[in-house]
Length: 229
Image 1 (cartoon, rainbow, N blue to C red):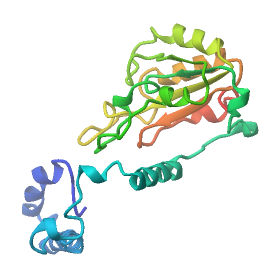
Image 2 (image 1 turned 135 degrees about the vertical axis):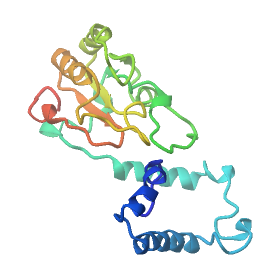
Image 3 (image 1 turned 180 degrees about the vertical axis):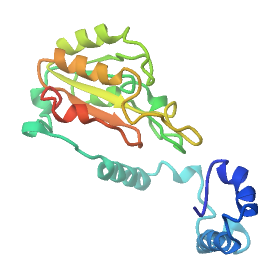
Image 4 (image 1 turned 180 degrees about the horizontal axis):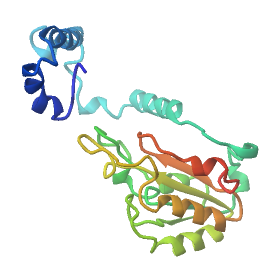
């Protein structure tokens, strides 16, 4: 690797060189790549305030142009993994009530990934969907993303039974993976999988499952379940 944002190379590079497993020319190649990028950015062109990006500041973050670009990047980044019988998109005029369920459905602080900046106008998925369906209810199901208890399952199931359509929000946050913190499983954390299946079994219609986080997740159980559209 040319670069490592954690502490692994800091702790292990010297011993690797002494053992003869890493050669000086390999280090030179990595440095060449790093310095080439820094030169292209103008980091060695004198006063950093006077170069191309030198005057960027907080005032540039929430401009209409940048927000439009962020929205477009988000749209391009969403992946629809399954859509049985063209269940989506929902017709908002035909949805009289909606239930949003999951530990990541109504918590803005948990939505950010690694290196996330301060949002311009943060809203949870639950808050955002209320703009489309007036009668929108919420239940967490799990108190947090690790989801080590099913004590909130009954509330989630009751909430799902009362709604015309149900969206379950599951996935990962920074309690599961970040710099120097690796997951030990590709499955959904804790009892999240059981929450999804329990809510799907109780819902009047097939549910919509939204996955958050940018790490790989094994959701094989969803593919063959007709209750998750």
